[in-house]
Amino acid sequence: MELDNCNMFLFMQKWMTDGPSKFTLPQLQENPGGWGPAPLESSEPMKQFINMPFQLFNKCDRVGRIVDWLGVDRYKKSDTRERYNERMYGSSQNAGSQFDYVHDNEESNFQLVDSSKPQKPARPYRRTQLPFRKLLQKEQERRDQQFYNQSNKTKRSIAKEQNRAYKLWQRRGGMRNGQPSRGMAGRRYGDRQGGKGRQPSVQVRPDWKILWDLDFQRLAKLSLPNIEGQDIKGENYGILYYYDKALEKVTVKNAVPLQRCGGIFYNTTTTEDPVIMKLAQKNEGNVFATDIILATLMASQRSVYSWDIVAHRVADKLFLDKRDTGGISNPVDALTVSETSMDPPTWDPSVPQNNAQDLATEALFINQNFRRQCLKRSEKPLSFDHARAPFEDDSPDARAECLYKYRKWNLGTTEQGKPITLVARTELDGALAPPSKDKEPQKLTIKAFNEWDSAQAGGVRWRAKLDTQKAAVLATEIKNNGCKLAKWTLQAILANADYLKFGYVSRVNTRNSAQHEILGMQQFRPQDFANNISLNLDNSWGVLRVICEFLLKQEPGKYLLLKDPLQPVVRIYSLPEGTFESDDEGDSEEEEDDDDN
Image 1 (cartoon, rainbow, N blue to C red):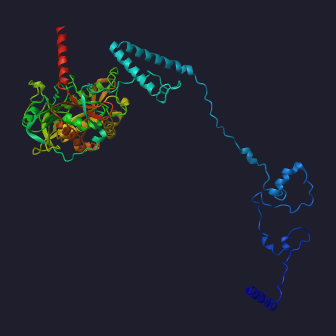
Image 2: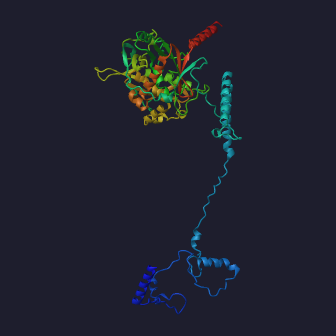
Image 3: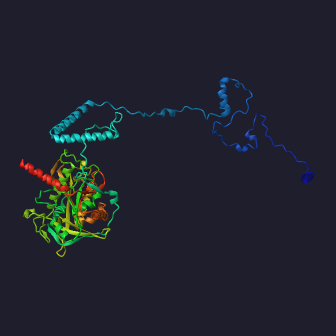
């Protein structure tokens, strides 16, 4: 209460001192000639807007009449929409002509684009259809004639495979709802006979017991570094001819025909080699094999086709052996063609020349003839400890014309502390003459690539690319024959070869598998070539060490290592006594019965 009295006293004191406040009217602009503001020329506040242009930016700007004194059209229902627009957007009379439609001549330049699909003119369909039908008819007649000329056994085999493929196609959803599935769209069943599937190299029997499954993923993690081999003194058998350097000048333009060189080639297995038996009695090692068997195991991760190796456990020793198949080649010795290709050759024997088995046989004969054609067989050879191997025939024409070197490697020790000493027979094909007499000749391993049909093999034509793009041709061979190249490289490393010679041999005609030409040569050091094909030698030795250690732990007996034809797995089986021996005896008895009849 005291505070309110104080404020009142101060207010009265200030009012008496200053006097009452004054109210001043603002200055108004008169416009005697109309409504609204005065003209700009006579109005002081509006002079600053004389030269400023005005432009409507939106139809919603409320620029129009201030008041409508007439109100003539206010109550007409027909003009209700127009009056609403006028209230919202202003008068169109005062807006000027800037929002009015003006017909311009540019409309005459406007053109419509026809985006519809043009209709193709009618073609003489029957004119091209009839010759094509005649070709199809002739091709079908040729196939029918070929089919009727086949034996009944072949017909049953083909029909069985077709029925099997048809059932497989149905299981995968063929002809759903009357329409072909995506994989068979646009095709007819029977247009292309499916090739015979890959079969195991030996049929597994029910009494065989699986001991271990070696999948490739686990094998890829193994490693055994710093493995060096050494020669066994006094155990070199055979001779070496010198390499003919004239083949280095061979090109596509001056190709050299591949000759048919006579002679005998030996692929004696481990248990049939007298030298290995002698070394086993001397306790030179406890694991015995040949170079091709070791290369097959060390390069097993790159293999696609099936192969098998027999392991004999005798006392404290292990013998890795090849199974006697009775043919010219064992699955271990086979020189496969396009094994790792995206489109490998078919196994169907009804396909002439270009099935997988015939191509492997062709590659075998090419390599045998090429290896001897590269050598100067008329000159004096390079001699070693023994002129001939014990398993060679005594005939002068039965000489192997190569060098067999027996070497050994230390693969460490087992879990029980027993050493693993590997002894193997390796092979060398030729020698390079030294540049001077004080140097030793360099040893060679000679192999040959063979071109059978670049269109079917998915590669490049050698005759068009070999002279200018040899690296591209080699890259294609590495992709299509990765397993075979890895085995060749490992054989050269096991034999301690100085160089690895490759020859490019092609068919003279793609339809003739008997005539070939040498189109070029190429040379590598084995260690360098192993790096080029991404071959991990430490991993290869690790795989071999694990297999040998596992088999050395087993009881004495017979075991089988089998590569699965459809899966990346190597299985080890325990075999009953006399498994493959009974087959051989049965075959011999059948032959005797046939002779008696």
